[in-house]
Length: 88
Image (cartoon, rainbow, N blue to C red; front, side, top):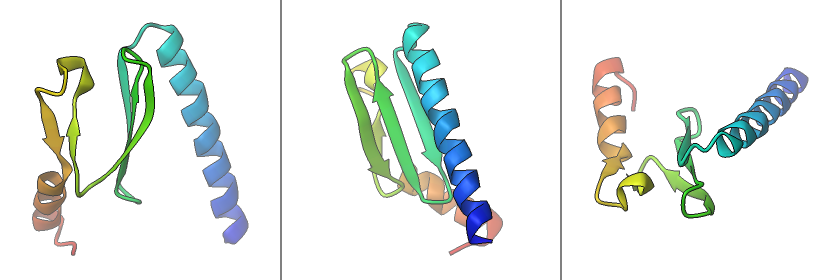
């Protein structure tokens, strides 16, 4: 079971690296990777050449393409999901 997790993680990491490179070279201004299992958000702000920016589901994550005037509060999203699905 530990080996399966390891290979799954390696495959996922490779996928993230490939997609991040593709989005950056395609001119994407911002790319978010949301990991609900670990309750993390990784933001690649290609427009301002700041990456990776790491957040948790306790944070308000600024949407950098709007100069931080808009943010997403993942603590509210987590609370609503917990209410819907009965998780802690």
